[in-house]
Image (cartoon, rainbow, N blue to C red; front, side):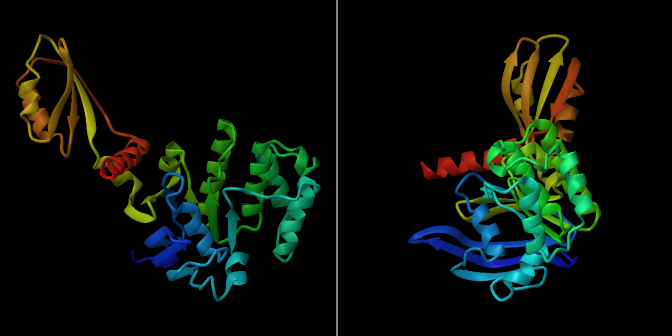
Amino acid sequence: MNQPMAITIRGLTKFYGKAPALRGVDLEVGRGEIFGFLGPNGAGKTTTIRCMLDLIRPNGGTIRVLGLDPQAEPVAVRARVGYLPGELRLEDNLTVEGALRYFARLRGGRVDWGFVRELAERLDLDLKPAIKNLSHGNKQKVGVVQALMHRPELLLLDEPTLGLDPLMQHEVLHLIAEARAEEATVFFSSHIMSEVQAVAERVAMIRRGEIVEVAETASLINRALRRARVRFGQPVDGKLLGNVPGVTVLSQDGTSVLLQVAGEMNGLIKALATLPVRDFETERPSLEEIFLAHYESDLGEAK
């Protein structure tokens, strides 16, 4: 990548006792990019984010966040970052407004309170109740607001829509897109593949503490296996299509054949041109299917 980097990680390792959590992670995230970080529980997502903020110390490797070394300048890094942890802890006896004003003071008071109220209104968050009386979803909204309230250069969001209803999930994605439009960089982990697919320009998949793939979201989906269902005007031997390079016959039911296609569709289209096709449908896999394919192969290796 030729653009300036918001995050550069080289050879990052972290052990908890003798158990490896990160095994030489390498990552680059460009400024102004929305970057998705995917992996199952225990893969190393949260550990990576915490190392970026010097909340925990790695055993090896280097990290630069907005050009700064978080171990040497942790306060400077955190002043320019909006962080939403996966497990948010708030003072129970404060009101929502009291908690947010506390975060504002930690940031030197450089917060536009009108913007805070706008965020709260968009997320349907009442500022008056005590934190201890909030549902999990409303506590998550407080976390989203405190991460965005100072308009940071970089957002590190660990499962930002966790516990929110679909309407609020959609609104959080809008807020992320708006932050990007204002030239913020967004690095976020999520288990909800559809939201990553909707907003992330690139994604990294982490497995057992190692990065297994970094790719543009669109290219990752476009190059993956596709399914095609063909309906014929009369019965056809599906084996004829199975002989086409890259095509696998998954099932056949009367005049309907379900196929899996790897790579280009050109060979299949040419083969179908000689047959009595009545209907032809194709379906690209979702990011979730691609993600699961990585981890299904991993389970096979483990066995």
